[in-house]
Image 1 (cartoon, rainbow, N blue to C red):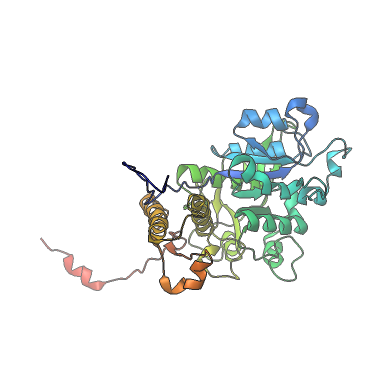
Image 2 (image 1 turned 120 degrees about the vertical axis):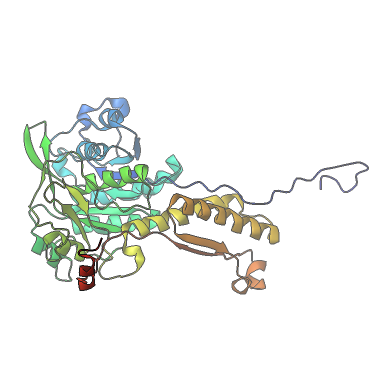
Length: 410
């Protein structure tokens, strides 16, 4: 109360009930790579600084046009070719440190933390994105450099920290057999991982290169990242990125057998090994093909589906961020009810959008002993079920001679 004694009337405003939960941004691609800074005006040059790119004009302004040996301009064009999405870009090429772009090392890509200033570089700089922009990138790519196992390991680490998905390419020239054996403990390529936050993709894609006026191979990861971002905008993060036409390509590195009803086809063998590939059959165009993360087939949990993993991340992060408005409130039944209703209102919204089949948030007194509440700790249960993709459709067919009785019927 405002005073211990009052001869009059006062109103005390009590804030109860549900609050709004805003869904975190999902169509955001994080890129680490190299840019031709000699083609960029001094005021727009950035080195090891996360930079927000909203469109193709910004892409050229901050990171230049496509140039042989540099990865960022090409990656940005590949993403924007898919039609939607934004990017947070970290350029590690430093003309004062590197004489040529070939001097950039895996250590530059993975990054460090300056012990004096605390400045993060390379992949580690993505940890600064929330304080800079209010959100993290939800897919991480390092085209070309991700063909090194050490980079894959670092991508997986940063993705665990910021709840993102890392997209990784196989080395140029790898065969289907190389990919499948590379998933095993004796694998000699960068695909020996079972991380539920890594998406393995193969093969490289053929793209027209204006600089050389020729067809060249480009990493699949950057266009898959663009497909995911565009799908998020068009359909929602709960949709699988699989079976979506890839824009801006003219072919693939290696022709793969693709039949929707053939379990022995090469695209099916790659999916079975937890690798996202390209489906190209008669009249289908070049389409993303595969629903699973690198966790498959080691893990059969539903979160090995890319869209389920991402949906879980978005739910958890959105709810956590929304709880700032309740932190340090006095614990009473009103607070407990407000938190439950806030989360349940959010879940109902997601159900209405098709992002969840069902779900609920509840407070179980048995999980909240008096000693924990006295220590300022509340525990809530969240149950939910995202839709899984219709990866396999089966028909049972019968020849029924009884249907012959319809012959001659009037």
